[in-house]
Image (cartoon, rainbow, N blue to C red):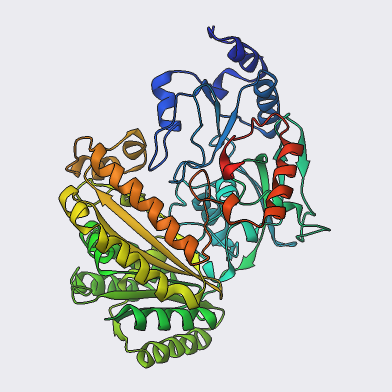
Length: 519
């Protein structure tokens, strides 16, 4: 073992003796970044532990919990529900960023095994040249968001027709609070007996830390069709969106309200959009097709959604062009039947051409703070939920206007059964270390920025809690539960007792991400 620096803290002496020097960050300024998420600053940790292997993860966790130190697992750091925000100072944050290897891609058995810190972008880059992908292949933040974080927090975007991240994983190796390691399920089919893999999915790291994860592979669809559609009224929009979801016509179907559309149009760069489209189109149809697609984006400019209230953007993907064209024709018929119209389809093309863009959108166009909150409801509750949220914001409009707080919606279909509604708040407030770390330097330098604004932030926090209450009344559910969404009060009482019993078994001292999930 390499010689360790002197650390004037008794618990840290034991931890430092168990792991390598490069695995620990102890400078308070450096640790501050790891104790923030997009919305919340946490208390100072005792240190940040960045293990380099499963074995080092296990011994480090064991050494910490033996000293009574709480363990706070952290994935890519892109979440906003306090999932890795410690309840008090002195915890050990475990950042998995050094455990990022792709261990195996098995094209015969159609599985991929990765260390939990592997990003969705890195996995995509390895699989795409082989014509392969995982069914659910990441979130838009996948440049930094990790496979392990995705399994712990759950979530979705790419491949949302096939469900969520946690439901698209075969098995995992997991380090428990005492440093012991278990393996869930089999190597190729989930489940083998009761679904132990599922038990450790979407747990916010409250049951254990994922060390390695095995995912199923499928062949990437070589045929695509892209569509964008405009609607004047939310009732028309919801009816069309839900019917597209029920028929599973799109691999991804998402949309915006007028406020969020305006934010996106102000922020994006035509030059980078055109370049991404040219590269994608060249890979699919040759050089001249690429130039044509890029030219169409530049010609359309940022004005093609100016007169649009609600928009749907979707991608049909499959093995044969005739099949995806037929799916798109069916989509267009649904849109027309519900009062919608076709508009320029640049947005889905741009996103598919660059599926993991830099997370510059974690700040508003002028540097405003940004924080989403979300819920997933049944199709039958979608319009009712939007109406209830609209009434909430109308009731608070005077205060929102006074403090410069804006809010818009993103929508996303989840499989055939779920309708995700994500209100996104923007308000003038200071940026933190996490924003400067993740936003591209050139983009960050252009942001106007604002001074600290605790009054506006307090209003956003109040509204976020009231949005969560609306989703509760609509029988909605949530991803990224962390310490924000009320899981206990919305669970069957006996089911919650079983969850508490599992927590007591795998973490008897209550040191593994205490407070996550409400446990």
